Amino acid sequence: EAQVTQNPRYLITVTGKKLTVTCSQNMNHEYMSWYRQDPGLGLRQIYYSMNVEVTDKGDVPEGYKVSRKEKRNFPLILESPSPNQTSLYFCASSSTGAGEQYFGPGTRLTVT
Amino acid sequence: ILNVEQSPQSLHVQEGDSTNFTCSFPSSNFYALHWYRWETAKSPEALFVMTLNGDEKKKGRISATLNTKEGYSYLYIKGSQPEDSATYLCAAFSGSARQLTFGSGTQLTVLP
Image (tube, rainbow over all chains, first blue to last red):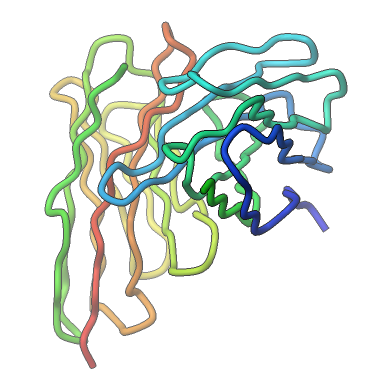
């Protein structure tokens, strides 16, 4: 089954404790991206990747890192999480950046 | 950052009513316009991806049109049903920025 998986689905953590949210797709898609969703603000792009080893900042990259060492995986790293990073995070992939996005199930992160 | 705007922010209609929403986006450097349906506790799912001025797409009772010269798209739902209740997101892909920027969505509630 074609899908995008994210882990964990729910995470409660404390300020400053490094964490990684994993994202994996099995559709051989070139383009992957991370979004955060906050009430009233819609989906905002954090980082995107056009291909392996090619990443670029989205609209809200501060406080986040990503890597794309393999085509299927695109982890999101929060080196020192802060409460303002409490949000719902979605990973997505597509064959091209302009093409239909396939979203993962979402990760709800709470930073206290 | 592209400015993608959706209206209205929320909408309540009676079962059987037809309805439509608007998405406006910058017409310069436009490449593609997406519509997604997002049900509560689920992930966004693609409805349409359109690229050409005058494009019209249809899926069952839902259809969409695109005007790239004036920078807007309409989503129509004919004969709304309670299961159509969801948030409808539009997103524009800029060829220059290579980013997909989402609007804040229109939340539709269909009352039985």
